[in-house]
Amino acid sequence: MGMTVAQKILARASGLPFVKVGDVVEPSVDMAMSHENTALVINQFLEVFKGTGLEPKVWDPAKIAVIFDHRVPAETAKTATNQKKVREFAGAQGIEKFHDVRGDEGGICHQVMAEEGYDRPGHVIVGADSHTTSHGALGALAFGVGATEMASVWTLGRAVNIQVPATIKVVASGRFNDRVTPKDLILYLVGALTAEGANFKVIEFHGDAVRNMATSGRLVLCNMSVEAGATSGIVPADQETVRFLRDEAGVTEPLDLVQPDPDAPYDRVIEVDVSTLAPQIACPHTVDNVKPVGAVAGTKVHQIVIGSCTNGRLDDLEVAATRLKGRTIARGVRMLVFPASWKIYKDAMTRGYLADLIDAGAVVMNPGCGCCLGVHQGALGDGETSLSTTNRNFKGRMGNPASAVYLCSPAVAAASAITGVITDPREEV
Image 1 (spheres, rainbow, N blue to C red):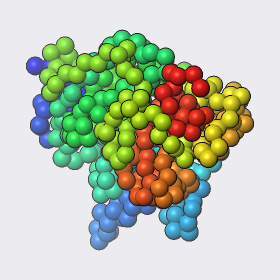
Image 2 (image 1 turned 135 degrees about the vertical axis):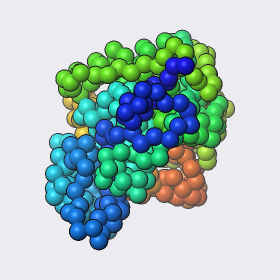
Image 3 (image 1 turned 180 degrees about the vertical axis):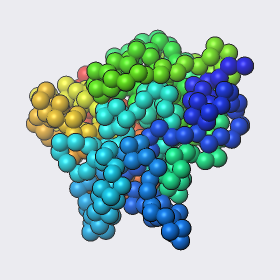
């Protein structure tokens, strides 16, 4: 019997010729990523060495990335003190893949990992963040871990007690219609699978629609795989993977384009013709409460958010800026724009996208996760409704349990900004 991409990666990383679903392995880790929660990891890491007489040293500082993004710039003295602690630890440990609060580097961790070439096909990537699934867009097996597990990785260089997951194969065929996007595809899939439909499984993406998709779209698919409960999402590496890593991330090393075997065992196969999809929207208060946008068209919105690790990339900002250029955001609506990285911010500025958005009435914020998470910038008032290109809409997600969040694509967000109500982007407004 053959192996899926996840099985092949875990077998290689565990030094085994073959692994089957359900096996428990301890794969070596190629990259370990964390953000401000590194402060918690440090505490757990130091506990490992307490009483041993050994100097606390991470197993390989070159394989650790620390990226500040959740609360940037620091919003409280507590956050600032934690960030100071992490800076000092990174310096002492020789962690060079450290991205501080700076305009010449960094941004949201999942975007920075891709841009900097830290993501590689065939690698095992662990992150102290649930949306670490994003990095499967470049052919890696990437999954989230807690602070204790990350401290173990820092110590051993391995992820312990990892059960080989089953894989769901998604075959997306056809061509997207105008103003229908990869975000609509993944929202549709999360709705179809439900929030627990892919629990402890990997979603492996195939089909013409995926092969023809840019890396930016693949990142959207893998990023939101976790919203169906998936351990990871993976797009098998191909020439688009090579193009992105060579041309955009500057990677020159050989790449291992891991592919599934023809007889790879799949838990189930889901086929979707993307040409039949309408723009989708996730309604409060769960990500799997998905409907075609027409089902909720006309719903009044107070705040629109474009950005995040899901849809804060250059093509997302282009979609919004093109629709809003020369137009005005509806009165009573505020739009917040969070580019996913400072590189994207500067590219969007050079191309005039940010100016077009500002002239329309948008407020452009620094790259970060605060608004999406609801801990910093952009909180909602009681009874307010937000339309957002982010990835979660749980009650209180944007800082207020007395508000409501709908999830959508940048095309839906931009069209709705003009009207002040949820609007199908295929309609001319």
